[in-house]
Image (cartoon, rainbow, N blue to C red; front, top):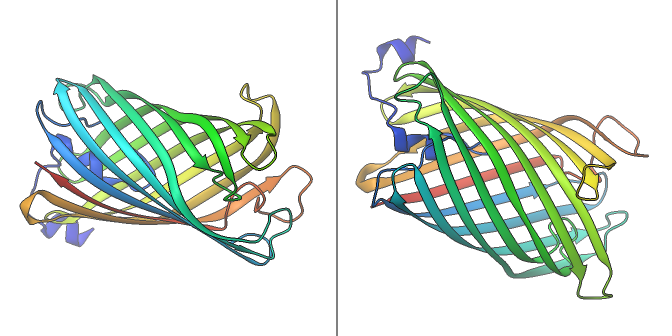
Length: 275
């Protein structure tokens, strides 16, 4: 806290919540006419046995055509390395993974209200199953309710997300169909320790279901981990986040974690440029 007290005040500008959080999302949309290019690398590592790693890079372009409204278009490239995992085929593969189109609308500006509130929809078309790495034709997306609030002006900001992620997939290997969904609740807090650099903690609770209507519960997991972000010269920003599964259980599984539907570790690196 001494570092917080010593640091000169640098406002947590509205557009900065875009890079403050790793796995959580703020309500910012940017100013009218603002453009941004963002690269987001997500890694998921560790199952109950064997070797498991998944790396997915999302390259995204964003544009703000209207006040409080943002559009985005993204492409994914994904790589899997799987060996000796019960229930999963061994795999070493990398592929172009699909496209996503995003729409974000801010209902309440936190700079002019008691908190920030926004809704976001990101329908997706994907070509690779996120867990197994098998080739699929998948339609899914993320549909989010976002909230954030400055707890200490220009120093500490918090965020809360409620996210629904449905997926409908058809295997390109045998033609079988699958339907599943995930509900994610996330909360984060970030504190500015020095000008343009913030540190924080994020926690997420995820519940996996077979089916789109949250009807057949498959498992759940709780993640906790640190985040650090920095605003760089020239309109660039950089973020790193790491989450560890600390509790969970899959249906029919053994042990204190759900390593069937989720992973032991998840990491995220973001690099962005505003212009």
